[in-house]
Amino acid sequence: MRLVGRQLAIMKVLWEYGEASVAQVKERLPVAPPLAYSTISTVLSRMERKGLVTHHRADRVYVYRPAVSQDQAGQTMVGEMVRRICDGSPSQLVNHLLESDQVDSKELKRIKKLIEAHEARLNKNLGKSP
Image 1 (tube, helix red, strand yellow):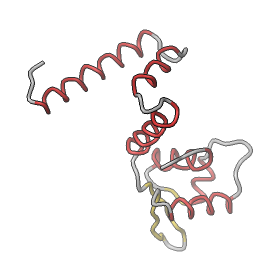
Image 2 (cartoon, rainbow, N blue to C red):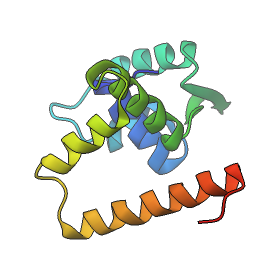
Image 3 (spheres, rainbow, N blue to C red):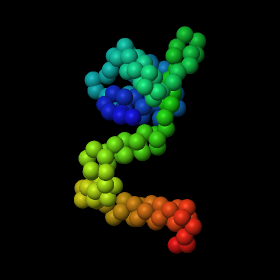
Image 4 (cartoon, rainbow, N blue to C red):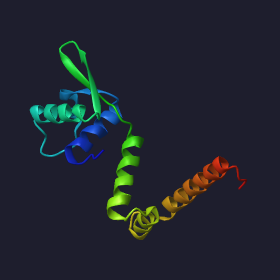
């Protein structure tokens, strides 16, 4: 699953609101210049064919909702990034992130806690004690 540009912006609206009509997506989409109604409708139709969204009818309006969660999409996109950019090495991705200006001491503490929790889950699954 590859979400970029318009698709990602639309999915973020659907993840935030749960479901939305084309008009509601257009209203809530934080892009400049605003996308045309027909463009959003076309993108949503294509996304539905890819299995990213589903729709139901409410009166005469199609209401779309995400078919994949934000976590599922994030995990898939990170996996693709690791394969394509980091030659399959998650540690390279972590290293790039840590060397960027995006990780302050507060974020680093959160990352350490996430790593500790992940290690604990792995040890539990392997039957080892910490």
